[in-house]
Length: 235
Image (cartoon, rainbow, N blue to C red; front, side, top):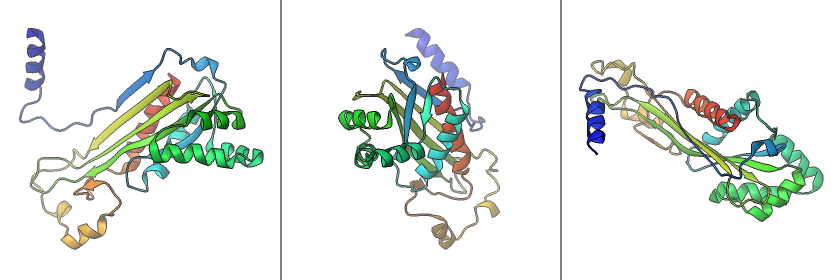
């Protein structure tokens, strides 16, 4: 217990009043069950992403980024991409099963193991890989605040073998990037926006607090999150 207090004190001393906000690396959390043996999988169908955020840009930005990074990794199995999966279900007449599995995931973030097993047989794959955009946030600090504008993205991937009701492998990556180049004493031009200009810049569908031009763009953060998810699956 005494050692814990000493460590806590060192952490507090390490970041005093003059400490500048830093952009730390992504936070990666991976869970796997003892039953997870990637070498036993030959083909895995990637069915895309669902979303837990209201911004309609989240999935269209994150999904192709994840596909791009998965394609660049040396995985132990072949990925069946969404376009090819849709082509196969059209040929086999399995569109209803495909939509049922995908839509149930998007609505509830759960997989119906019976429908999913049926879809695996239709697609001739060993497992389903599917994901979620968990958080998607931009924050702009006011001119008088010491807080830096920031952009945060959290996304996850889950791997379900045929007939499984729970994922045997799951990864979640969180990344926040702050605009650390802001000059706290330069409250003028960069933050001079009328109320009307701010209103025009905001979208009612974007999950944000005081969103403004100072926050980093989503593209950079999305790319980092997607890359880390792909690395986690390949490791």
